Length: 241
Image (cartoon, rainbow, N blue to C red; front, top):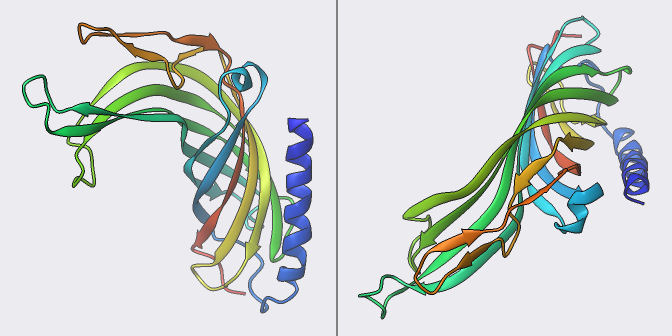
């Protein structure tokens, strides 16, 4: 079912962007020799991971170096950050200052890094692409303390972490909006992110004892996920038409 969600999602993107591309002004169809993008990500767990996690959200970015004049073959470097669980409890500031309370927030997250080839087979204002990367993902659970008037936590601690091997394969569409030396495009993509066995915490994975100490109950499973992304891509050093 989740694989069909991926196919239907890509089909919807294609159907939406084709009418838009017909309204764009004529521009150089090639991206820049170098390109980069940033965007928002939504993650849907698959396999064993979906037994423990509902979904995740975050952001990501990438850089691509193209090797040929047609900008079809390149080397891609990816980075992503996903939060897949969060919980907040109200606690006294200390045992001796119980009239002042603070928010203790625990988040379950991972960073993913990968490098690999990218192939962009078509030319024009709407260009599909596919890619694959190999790298590492860092899973960690962090607790932080914030007061009512604080915009950022004033103290934090990592409760549990693990590093795992990561393989990713994905594809998407870039829709050119502007030309020139800094072409800007909309970027729609989906990706299957495959991990090895990982030890991680989910919501409720940290329990507090009456004496103030804590104990953790990690889960060990695969942590595969399908990511859907939307963002902006910018090219650099594009040749004039």
